[in-house]
Length: 104
Image (cartoon, rainbow, N blue to C red):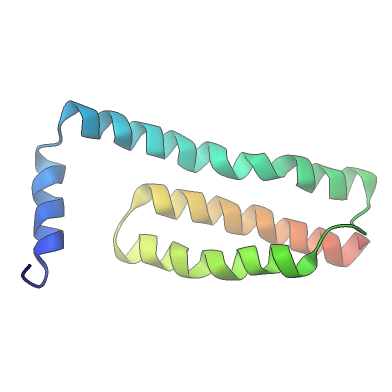
């Protein structure tokens, strides 16, 4: 495989996507918005009850740290679903970390 051929292939697919590719793209974009919402109950638990004693700051902090390279990857490769997904996850996870610090 020639260097850079991945990007050429990607451009060709982007110009003429199949119906299944278009459907998959829409599904992934929807998931990019919805997936981070699964963390909302944890966020509410911390801020509504003002309690985070049993929540691991190491785990949630690592989620933030590991999300940052993924966000940059999405930006560099102009991958909208990755950018949306990790932006939302980093925001929500950061709020959880702040809540742990405040109420833990």
